[in-house]
Image 1 (cartoon, rainbow, N blue to C red):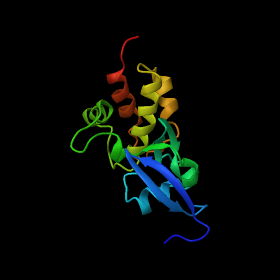
Image 2 (image 1 turned 180 degrees about the vertical axis):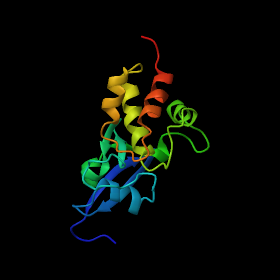
Image 3 (image 1 turned 120 degrees about the horizontal axis):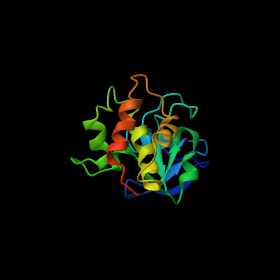
Length: 158
């Protein structure tokens, strides 16, 4: 229910334009999960430390619990649900599957979106660079070596 204090924003989420009223204090993660029903974006720490809420905003990986929904107005947001078409996987998602980079799955969406951003910037990142990019994605299952292997399997020679 909109209130007089709400802000009208226009944001594209996973290719769908959303014209929506949001409270000035609403976090992007809450808009995505609670108002748009896209629960693949996880909320862990709510302080921007764990990376579970990572999404792409205009192609850049962002921790959505550290961004206000109103700040995304005019932007293109991609969540894990929008990373690939239903029933298909990106090469990175397939590599995670093949290299057993998925355990409980809580950190997986954020990790995939962070690494998607990395691979767009550098199609053949060094191991140290891969590890630096997933440093902000906490994983209790310890899939870091498998995530690195998955990315390295996709690395294109310069």
